Image (cartoon, rainbow, N blue to C red; front, side):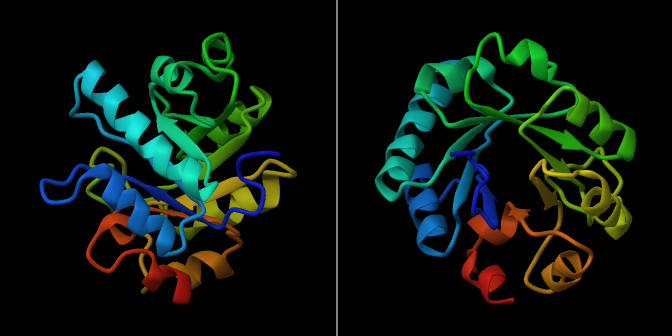
Length: 198
């Protein structure tokens, strides 16, 4: 089964001084997340592997797929279900030499989406839809890319991402998104229940 089959709420972790990753992921899943991406650019290699294995244990218990951000080596070592690549990461074809699960690609413009589809990425993201501190170097693309992706992605699953909250998720869905990814709304105080109910 493809990792995004049936998934609607894709939660991406973020570092927290107060909440350990297993607890964060457990709460996100209980709140409605049906796909988890483990993302932390602050950890050493050893720390990343240790945290990723702890998160994987939670995901396995709940039968929720785990995606590793950026790190094809770590995704392969921990036995993750998926790998997510940014525009500055390994090309999809090269990453396949290291990791044999499903692979997604961040896309911020139509040409990037077309390139990812040509490389046979298993899924793509469209965003950041709105401004977000997790992507400070990227200007928000608004709903235009969401609408474009809805028309051109074909059978490839895709996810709208970036600054999506309970206040704007309705607009994103009306623009054509069947799946949304959240970071702050999924791992923050309110958790994903607010998004799920929107």
